[in-house]
Length: 291
Image (cartoon, rainbow, N blue to C red; front, side, top):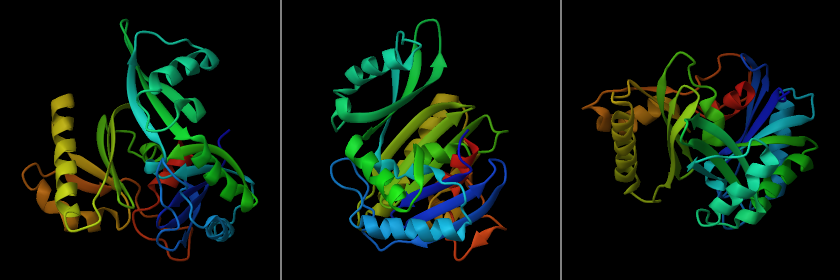
């Protein structure tokens, strides 16, 4: 059974949620200094692991954490998510993983043989399988797990932020367009039921051109939604610092022609919040409890 405790380690700080999947009981947040978390594939992500562990301890204590096991949510930039097609794939994971690793050798910007890999079949036809594969460099995974252990908790499942957030989407919508911001990284995702159709992460420039780049990212995602599903999206589900309202104020003009609604992927909790909880940052932990 998945723990009733989840934490997200993000550039802005550490977010913790505790409770049952349907109704989280408590949320807390501990901020981190800028630059403490620098997600990526090439080098260490945590410039001050002790500070991250300390923030995690505070957030877990504020959330009233009792059990020691928890789900970890990490930045999208720390992992690589791919959608791959296969003619066939063995049913047993121990037989499928070597095939996946072989395929990933030319697709990953890091060593596939040393990566932590998970996968899920998204769609199946008589001719082929569509498989979502998630890969994370083993040293980067060890970083995040080690700060959890240093806080005297035991890491369980590790999820990327956007993939965790998808479990918080409304169950009654057939197809959804998601926009997730995490530091300077932006991920667009499209789902149809339980199937992931698109997962694309991009890094924004750290200058005034970021606005134009964001506008282009969102416009491309809307166009891809229309081309793939033959209908425009009615809603963009946003997750990230500031929440949907702030994003709409900054970027709403780029939607004027198509006019989809912009909503928080996970609404701000009205109860169970300890201390100051920034808007727009609970989707990852909410989804981690629900998935």
